[in-house]
Amino acid sequence: MQKGRVTAVVTDKNIFETDLVVDAAGVAGRKVANMVGLDLPMRPIFSEAMITEAYPPLFNQMVGHAKGLFYGRQTAHGSFFWGGFVGTEQFIYREGKPSFHYIGPTISRMVIDFFPVLKDLNVIRMWSGLIAQMSDAIPVLGFTEEVPGFVFTTGFCGHGFGLAPVIGRLISELILDCKTSIPIHDFCYGRLHKDSGNECSCQGNAACTTVTAVCPNKREWLKSI
Ligand SMILES: Cc1cc2nc3c(=O)[nH]c(=O)nc-3n(C[C@H](O)[C@H](O)[C@H](O)COP(=O)(O)OP(=O)(O)OC[C@H]3O[C@@H](n4cnc5c(N)ncnc54)[C@H](O)[C@@H]3O)c2cc1C
Image 1 (cartoon, rainbow, N blue to C red):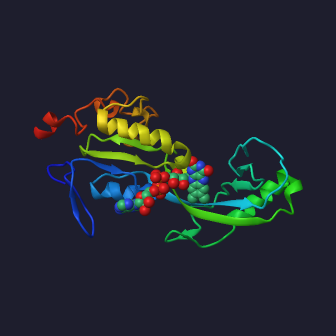
Image 2: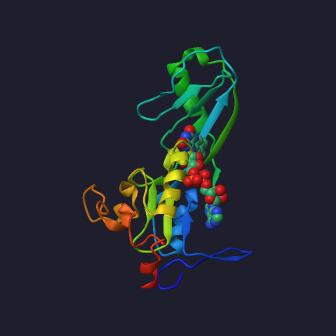
Image 3: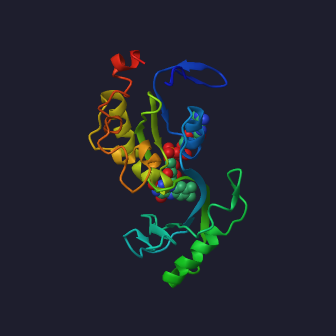
């Protein structure tokens, strides 16, 4: 960084000069933000999901417990995909790896409780990973006033796959055109540093509405700092 703005990305192999950096590092998004002197109320939480063997068609809808204890759907192939949250996710991993494998069995018990007919179905594979959980469970998107040229697109919590297509499009619009076809100011970095209340401190603020001086495409402003 120079004069408070982004000037390059340094890797172990190269230095890439740029006036624009996108923080799309998922659960490492906080670490990357720290590199430019910003911080996020983000913590990693561990999550597991599973696929069962095939079963005759049972339902078409995605189903889920209102408290998030489990959610899932049956695939066209007949397998069920199940995931869920059991309340201990933030404590049961070390260095990104699970230290106890009880999320899967706990979810399974809940599924069987609601769908006893599935009690003999085998789980054929599971996967797990760390989720970038924000304090208000909402992603961080867009430029920041603090570091011109630094763009957030991280903190997707448990919804990054679903949001990826629209967010990719919005962030490319933001970078190329300095505006987005759907407003994103409710997701701004500034909301995380407001003094009180739930209203986004960036609401109506030029930096967050993105047609703004912090967009690197507004070169004239950048030259002045
Ligand atoms: C078990 C499980 C089930 C899930 N189920 C769903 C679901 O059903 N639906 C859904 O929408 N979401 C789901 N999610 C959440 C989803 O996985 C995340 O929200 C999504 O992957 C986040 O995408 P991302 O691009 O922000 O981060 P990531 O997918 O984590 O990608 C970040 C990338 O940045 C790279 N990176 C990190 N640090 C650096 C660095 N310093 N320099 C360069 N690169 C770096 C990483 O290697 C990685 O490739 C699930 C997650 C888990 C763990």
